[in-house]
Length: 316
Ligand code: CP
Image (cartoon, rainbow, N blue to C red):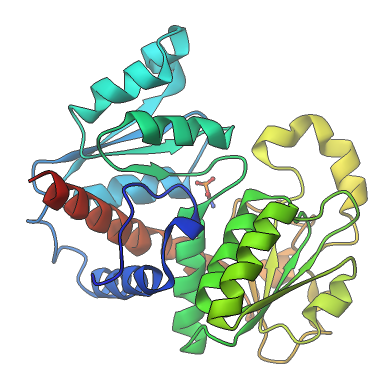
């Protein structure tokens, strides 16, 4: 790894473009030879602190750890003293003395930052309300496998422009020199700070981001069309409003008819079939969704290996 590896992976923008490419390259190698790195971290362990449900992230991290010779200890909030008043700082300080990395899925991104500040081992964001970097690595790997290259690619994100998946995909596009159009309804526009950070990086990588409220306009030149759940885990109380406001932001065959013939459909899952994406698209020939899910494993393996080996070298 020649790119700089940060102490923690909290957001995609923590990764320099070169580091991102090298993580994807490593994931390709790990996909081809899953047990080729099992000696490097043998006897180690990661903690998976999950305050929200997860299928893909939790299992891919656990299997990735196993393939690297490590144990994965899943820690649900209610099973920790954290759920009974012990502070985040005290918890993480102690966990750092047992574990080689702490992965965390939580609500407020500030909690992930707090954990990273208190930890002496890498903290990997397994999803916060504002960022989902592990997902974006799998997204990029999937697109690179399909199209051969990322720089110059065009993509459209349809729906909730404030979502963690959108924020992280935007940052991933920025680092990769991609052109992204986000189609979101009023009230669901991507945060200006996140846009500004992406634009600043895109000025160096050659990418671009544009905004619209019109899904048809967004997909017109898109090689990849990304659908996102309308009602995320922490927004159940907004279900009715979101379902109504996002109703025109469904990725279906009618929308994809406006996209180039080569356009593929993406979704991070879990999907609400018939809402943000139809079964015809999800299970159809243009879907890269299942490959995206599959690629969570080698990218998780690459992240764990890279961050843990770098941290060990720094403390040796
Ligand atoms: N995409 C994703 O993060 O899936 P899970 O919520 O199942 O982990």
